[in-house]
Image (cartoon, one colour):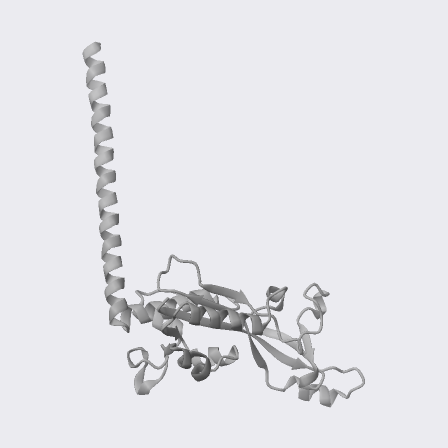
Length: 257
């Protein structure tokens, strides 16, 4: 696990007016308040695309935001509130749906799982697209929690080869199309799958950044192609032999007649 890739997806919430005992003007101000984003889905993958993710988990909303169980009535299922936010009501407006977070572990639990995976698995490089933002959303200090334990980070957003004119960063979906053979990601509506995005970030790193990984990737690719070609030749030979046997049987049948 020398190299791992991380991606985090978010649930986006916005305050809604609570008109009970309050004027409409105050309610309108609440509707105009900025939305907040909370990390609620995380995935960590290794270098080999066929292997299952090392970690993939939903994360429950913070207790101060969640006000009712996931099986609440339909017209209330997306509303949350929090004492720390002045008793305001919030509703989910995008990203990971609250219904997917039923019985999900809390942030602290997922955070500990991730840190244990990185440290005990002897991870040397953690790759991501906007990796600093993702780590911050998980409450992980890049310097104290990772670098101090020998884990470096690599951000595909800041790698010159992956940037546009003037050093402008590109979306991960754009990089996947340009550098991964036209790969299409993030095509479904709603929240992105963090595993899909993490694998794209990993493949960008493996194929275009780390020389040792490039050599390993190309070696495996050539071996896979050779194995596939050998399998195809074997199938052709086997079919030819079967055809020859059938022909021989027909000849023998003709002789008997």
